[in-house]
Length: 257
Image 1 (tube, rainbow, N blue to C red):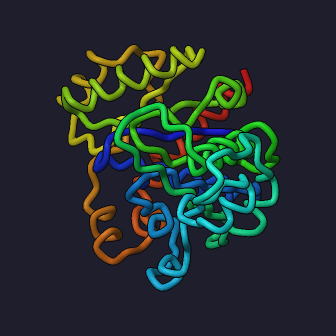
Image 2 (cartoon, rainbow, N blue to C red):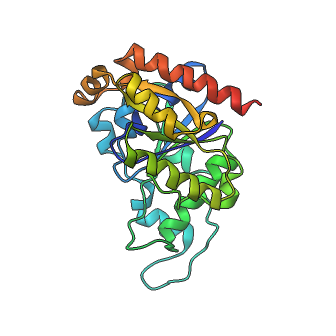
């Protein structure tokens, strides 16, 4: 199972991605969660401590590693576009609560279309995780899909956009759907988070096609309590865990169709 979770900051996609990862781990699956978000807070949501996370350096910040694998340095501007990456998860992933975390980081550029050693490494690692890894892989991504290529998307089982009940969040879903279509992906699913009641549910249903809607996660103060304490929402909120379990079952069912 290969799942990319995306959405704007603050909508709860990391809570969803982390809980989904732990649900698969609870089943005894080998799970690798990759953090490709600039905020890089997936580790806290999985249950890592601040101290453990402080010792993790994102792959895109490992200049020596990137130089070794791509051959690029300050004097050599030519570099390999297919660097060796198959050993990266085993070397750099850290485990907690049955989930391996790989913090990939992101590439900060002034515009799109960056072709730099860091970006090449990032895309190659994601490609390896999606197409060659035997693990359940969950990618916690930012709202764009620029780190994915056409070859990578062929291995994806689900693209999931986490949204809130609001017009701007719905617009993010439409943008991701457009980007995914450019990559040849026709199925983009939606999880609606922070839903407060029937009015929010009806709003979402009026904006999202029924075949794209995986389910609702209702607003829950226990998730906020978990965040305040830097803990995993999986351990704090049985209600949210149960709602995401239902969404997971739908993901599994559609992947097996």
